[in-house]
Length: 149
Image (cartoon, rainbow, N blue to C red; front, side, top):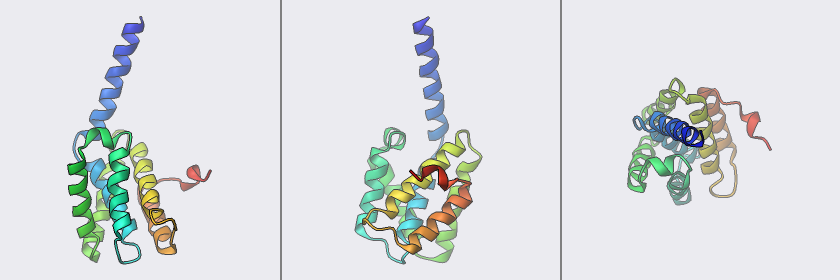
């Protein structure tokens, strides 16, 4: 019986990971949110760039699914898009890609929390970053009150 439980649990875990890694939507969304927050003040600082790569590489889900080079490449693409209005709109659309996926609400929460970590990368949450975080949460349907502890 214990063996059956392990097989069932293992299969369930693999299914969740497959839902997350089926394509790069999750990685693209989290990098897009990070780029939007990092660019909130009009400049993406080195601390913010390194924080997103470090955070995603050490993330319990993303870090296992994607190699650091893939994370760096997607993050850099998103940082480049953040430089102008049309690019930022593309970034916002990346967030939409995860909302209807299996585990979409959990992915949305993870995306928001990573964006919050990026906003705090320099030790200070600026008003512009806070405004972008609110927009990200609204777009993803994340209740930020769940994280106020």
